[in-house]
Amino acid sequence: MGGGRMPNPEELKRMADKQAAPIVEKLKSDPNNTALLLQAGAIYHAALQFREAAAYYGKAVEVDPSNVASRIKLASSLFRGGDVDGAIAQLNRALADDPKNANALFDLGIIRLQGKKDGKGALAAWRQLLKSNPQLSQDRKDAVSKLMADVMTTQGDRHGIEGAPRNDGH
Image (cartoon, rainbow, N blue to C red; front, side):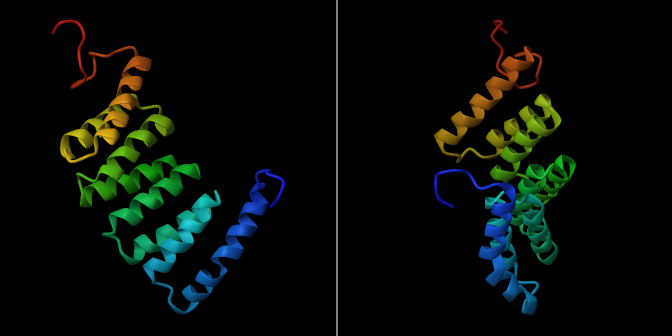
């Protein structure tokens, strides 16, 4: 694609199909190869083909249900493909297996906020993220704290949310 224009969805799909073709071919003889399934999922996700990505990530999760990273990737594709509830369900399952997983907690907050307009749910996820992951980099902590502050500001209720900083002297 020359000329600096963004490819349209059909072009993106064709490009992803072409890039994924050798992987899909290998999957015919090795359909439960999670590395190949994740590779195919990543190609389709990068090409904004979220349903296809979710299908490959979903198969990877079927093959290895305890792989939290695969489940988080599945949740991301589901969310971007419009299945907010499916994404939240996958993240909750990931957190059942790994309750402190920073990526799952971060994504759960984002999806609750953007997909469900649930600021309190987002804050709860991010509060748990910060509480259970003291080893997070300062940059990541700052980014999460800013997201939390933005939510509290837009909700207009800084001290009505349990655990939120109060600025009324209490």
